Image (cartoon, rainbow, N blue to C red; front, side, top):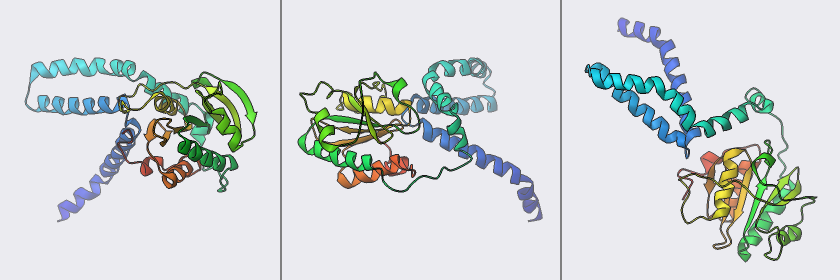
Length: 271
């Protein structure tokens, strides 16, 4: 018993270290879901297990091959994961993103007027089967990720928003960007996602919404013209077929300070 107690007292630093490493890997896997990183991490874990077996059973030839793979592997990973690494570095390079790890910014709990107008407008467009894309800019600018349309800087109005997505309007095919409680621009074209997790039945609007959400922290609301479904794209994930209550609840969750989208939308988010 004394030996067991002594072992526990000696192992506390190691247990803390193991807990820290496990937490690190958990958040790494959480961030990599739905990207190339998931397959790469699974491959690394498998490779590590095979290497351990080769070491234990003295499989010299196979171990030599694995040594070479592990030596040149990091360079290959840099090439394969270059887009994902660039996104992480872009976000980490912003001063406010780093400061938010150490302090919480106080924000108003009141719902933005334009958010309420957007919610009602999206529901009305859904009933009328009018396709639409709304981009809600948050902290990271979206301009560098899209082909700009027509700048408006208009005050929010439900009838005005609906008219922009009517088929006779030349701006109806593009996305509307909402910035600083204003309709900043319309007719914008978003980058198309190359993710393999997106269902084949989804069209350009949904792929474009996911594509933008992969590159910045914007929230994208999509109204399907064919099915009248409302979807939300955020952080490279897509919540589809939301009813009115789900749409309102999840839109608040991602736009307002309580960013719990990952827990609200269980995986797989792409269906």
